[in-house]
Image (cartoon, rainbow, N blue to C red):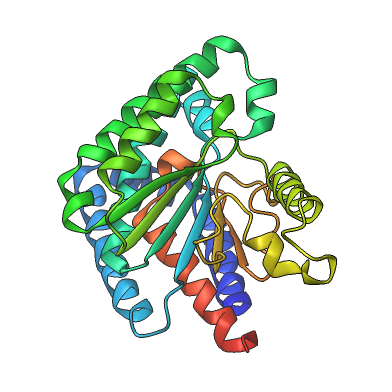
Length: 293
């Protein structure tokens, strides 16, 4: 069904491009496309589509844990001739929107990839400092957000947190302490995070427990590794979304996403819409109906 829809969409696009090759059609089309009437019509049509899509996905099983690789802040800024910092700011605001959408759907777990161990090594110090400031601001805003408290969202961070600047660690602690008693929803931000590094750290803990005599060799299995991951209390992701067109997982939750559905979209993270989220969830549901067991 998905391939058929894409095929029909391509044929409609090709027909539209062919028609726009004629000046008698292209000239009025250009005037209309730049008018307020066109913008209003498209906006209303999109709202209707998204509302219907929401009603449709709510009739099926929703993923319980959605993880997002938030990619494309810098490319979003470059496309608009803006500074990188502006792109990251837009990305921060987008995360708050997406959290609202996740809460409205009733999905209990959201995990996002904000800063990798590779980012810390490869990005210039000025950009990193700007990112750290955004994390501090964002975490404090989340910790004080009335919606977070009314929905009882537990906020946490995962990664090699000890490698982060003190101001970021303090903001993490503040958000975790303010929401420690909540359990209806869980939001986790991955900072200074790497999937391979997480597995290495878990294996080191297993080795230490075995060396101390607290863990028998025969007892070491996948569950023992899982129990020593950064966020062992969180279930594995059902759906992983990556924005901005790259189709790889980039060292994100390598152990946990063994059976997750992966969804890639060309949309840059700051431009990610409610409709894009619903598209990802609906694709997950279609795959589950067809292949799940």
